Length: 232
Image 1: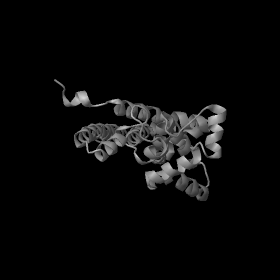
Image 2: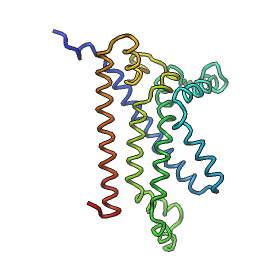
Image 3: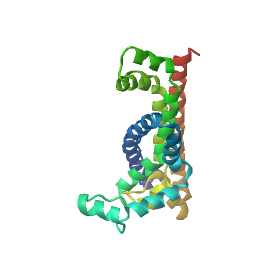
Image 4: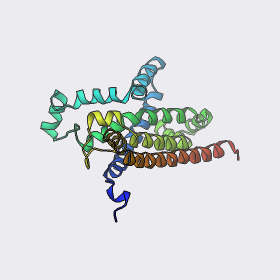
């Protein structure tokens, strides 16, 4: 006797989690690097660069997806260059899922990293410099450890945003079952097909994952605040 779960293709879940895990590696590293670089820029330049790096957070995801499609389409010079010289394609491929998720999730990691760095006690930084530490040592041994809870929580939030991405992913990577169909794309597809039971299943699944993510952020930031302030 077949059950409801027997009729579910779980490939969207695997693709979603794989996309989230790979994209968060890029997003975590690039977000921290961008936050560090912006910290040392002149104020007016910082405002402009900060606005550019934050844009994917405020733009509709479909706009970001459309811009990515224009850039990486095989009919465009850059897309043709990548395909002909490096055999790299982002349109209708899993790599496109990773790229779209990374672009949309990046601003969350970047903003979280900036906020975490800005909350580090300046006296600790001055103390490190007084002891003769280089700027690199101050960053690696003082600033990043102190900003650790904020960086980790930012990474978790960025991961959650990556696995929930729909607009840019559907524009760039499309909706190919077993290849580019993520959970978010699967929900839209099942609703369009009138399969509300399957859509509901995926909705419950992604909601449960999102709850675990938010709870993890609360636990991490709570421990971080307890460490910094001594509050119980």
